[in-house]
Image (cartoon, rainbow, N blue to C red):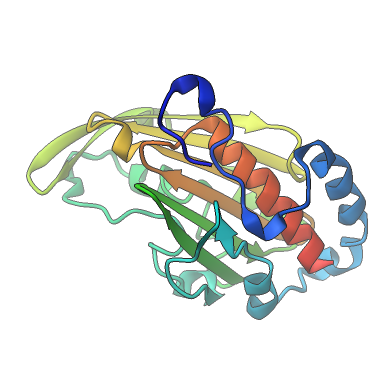
Length: 236
């Protein structure tokens, strides 16, 4: 769970309670087995918003959702529910950096797709999860984009204060058919650090985001593994 007492003890920061009983050692094998049973549904991308909502985590570190899970077309979900952060005066920000560093995948591709999202407040950290129904070809397109070079280092003016950001992304194996992480660090300090993990499953795309002082690659990967496994189990 979140523990800021020392760097040495904060390897696993998030343990979603919705999948209690599923060990990390078994995540990979159980996920691949469940994937096979999703093939028929995936061909049509046959998950409606209600089904996706039921596949979301319902607790993180024993903490329930900050608000009822939202569902509908992806474009109808609020930015807060999907893990995006409200932008301030973005005159100093290069074009497209706001979207590229917030959604972690191309939202335009899945705008009309059924989706569901939920948010949590765990101590001083914000956590969010989103699931989007998407046939494999569409899901691959949604994850095909890469962070623009201009967005690796950029500035944003918020409430009259100019902050500098560093953004990096990296491919990830072991979760779904394809996955990658996105990290955005702010000159404001650890409280604004942001880690996102986006993955492609059979018939759906998922993303988890952690924002706050305990955000880290280890935390978002742990959360992503558990969220993916639970989603596959629920959608089977």
